[in-house]
Amino acid sequence: MEVNIENTGNKTFVVLNGRLDTTTADKFMQDITPLMQGDNPDIEMDCTGLEYTSSQGLRMFLMLQKSVTARKGNLVLKNMKPQVKEVFDITGFSNIIKIV
Amino acid sequence: MEYNLDFHCQMILDEYRENMAIFEKMKEIVREQLEKCVSDNNIYVTAIETRIKTENSLAGKLELKGHKYKFLSDITDILGTRIITFYTEEVDKISALIDKIFEVDWENSVDKRKALDLDRFGYMSLHYICRIPKSLYYDAEHPELNDYRFEIQMRTALQHVWATMYHDTGYKSGIEVPKEHLRNMNRLAGMLELADEQFSRIRKEITDYRRNVQSLVIDGNFDDVPLDSDTFRSYLTMKPFKKLIDKIATINQAEIYEDNLMRYLTTLIKMRFLTLGDLQRLIKDCSDDAYKLALHQLSATDLDIIALSVALQNLCIVYIIKKGGGEVGLRMFYDSVFGESDYNIEHARRTFEQITKINIK
Image (tube, rainbow over all chains, first blue to last red; front, side):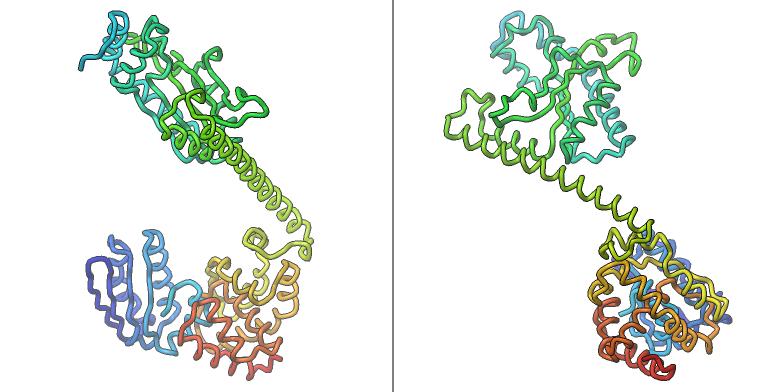
């Protein structure tokens, strides 16, 4: 699981690649921790390369969403593969996190 | 700066200059007390303004009517405060609270709302002349802080607009104003007074409506309760989707995340759910199939976290299919809930395929 983070003036761009499951969740958490503390709470995640997410991954997206909301920012997930989008849809997470 | 003042008035002006620090301290105390007062009592005001009369303004006043004042302490508006409220009732509430905080000089306080004759319209404001009581603040080196009086004006935002516009005409008293202009200004005052009354009435009606709706919801008279943001919010506190979401959660022993369902309100209204009774029937008629859909979607996965909205989402999906809305209806539903997007085409296609497999009609 690869997470590439790029900060610009007022937005943070993140590119996700790989599978987000039990084996990669800890590293993913480490990688996104700065996004939960930074003073740049507008985050755009490109999910083109995200192959799968497990419940653990959903929980981390939820933590990130809460942290961003608390800082009055926005989290947007983009270019999601159909199989990943389905996970968000059937768990109701499409109602919680903005997917475009 | 030198002014054209007689000896007596010059003495008053000198006293003003010497005591500026005291007025600054009074300003600080009064402002702090008023801010605390509105905040502690959950009163929302549009503004609290405080100002100390400028030297120029005081000199002008002394030039015009200095003979009226023996001492500086006879002038009651060196420190002036204005509280601007949204509603007329709040003027009354704040005035009652001010009476508890400061010493009100009733003899010199004026309720200009009552000062006008019944057939007249014009300046409407409540003016209190007050002192800071020793129990609130006392400095033995400056006991005069408790002697100087200050003015508090209380008025609504609309009264404030009128007074400000009137002031802008350059006239200080009604007597100076040319009759035609005075008549027009007073017509406006009457209109704004009526508007103030209407705003208060609307607020009271909304409060009554919310109370009434709450009791109808609690009593279970759902068919009598129209679906709107107040009633839906009240309805959600009864956790109407709990039974269904708990059942769905058992599929994978999932944790339930309680997300906000208010975002569904617009969509529900578009779907012609007009009363809470309609929602009750949705739950009664569609829960079994909504569960079957969740079972079909989740049982082959190990996803053990779900949002509360899955229950309402699946109920709506089942309702659309039962009403013959098909794939197009599902897409319209997703467009309404999530906003228009290409994802919704695939989402609707996939859901329709799943629904067909589990034979919901």
